[in-house]
Image 1 (cartoon, rainbow, N blue to C red):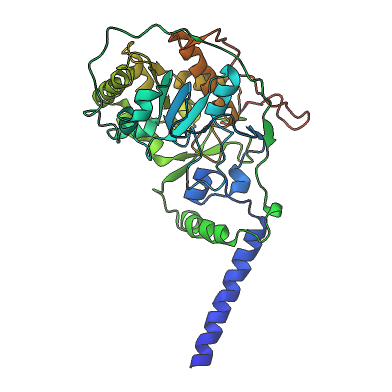
Image 2 (image 1 turned 60 degrees about the vertical axis):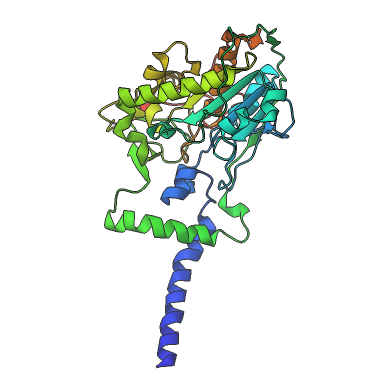
Length: 389
C-alpha cells in the first residue's frame, strides 16, 4: 500500500517537473507588476525597447535632516516599491526632473511617511523645501486619501506667499544608461517559482475561461502602441475601468480635500504645493481599445475646474502622445509609466514649477522625443501604427 502511494507521488512529481521545468527555462523573469499579478508571460508582454536608468540615481530616498529643493511624496510612479523585484532608483520622473532642472529632489513613500506627519515635524519647520509635490495614482481617488489628517498641522494662513527668488534652471545634462529587460537565459537557476505561479494563475483562465481577475488583457484598435510581442493587446488593472471616475460629486469632494492639503503645505508662506495625479493606464488608452469603456475618466476635468488648485494635468497630453505614435508611455507589462511617460511627467512638472515662480528659465521642449538613441533596423526610430480592425 505504502509502495503504491509512493509511486503515485513520484509520478505526480515527474509530471509537474515535465510541465514546470521546460517552462521555467524559457520564461523571462517577471518584471512588470501586471504580468506578475495576473500570471501573464513576460516574454509576450515585456517591452522589447530599452528603458533608461541613471547610475547613480539623481533623485534619492529622502533623508531626515537633509535639505531638498523639491520633496516628493509618491507611490510606485515615483519610486521603487518594496514588493517590486526589479525596482531601482534612477528610472523615475523624479530623476528626469532633477536632470532637466538641477533641483535637488528627495522622495518619500506617501503610505509609509504620511504627509500630515511631515508637516507637523521639526524637519518641515526648520528646513522647508521650496516645493512639496504630492503624487497620487488616479485609482487612489476612489477612496478618501489616507494619512492626510491635517487637524494638527493647519496654522493661520499668512497674507500670501513670501516672494522668494526663483531657482535658476541648471540642467545636469546627464545621459542615462540603457536598461534592458532581463531574459530567461540570464537566470541560473531558472525561475521555477515564477513558472509555478504563472501556471496556477493562467491555467484557470486558459482552460476554464475564468474571468474577473485583477488584471485584464484587452484588444487594441492599433498595433504599435507598445513594443511588446503582443502587438494588438495589452494588460490593464481591472479597476482602471470602474465607473466612479465619472462621478463629479465624489471627485469634487476629493478635490476639496486636496485643496486643504495645499493650504496646509503653503501655510508657512515659503513652500509651494504641487499635485501630480498619475492617470491610470486605462484612462490614457481608453480611446485605443477595440471595446472602449462607455464613459471616460473626469478626474483631470474636475481638478482643472478649480484654477486655484495647483495640479499638473497629464491625461490628455499622454493620450495625444500615444495618438502620435509614441510607444511605451506605459509599460506594456505594467500599470505605470515607461521611459517616455516618466520623461513627459518630468517636463510637465518643470513647466508648472516655472509658472508657480519656483523656477526661472524653465523651457518647454518637445515632449515626444526619446532621450535614448534609437536602434536602426530594430523598430525604435519610427513607431508604426497599423489598424487591426
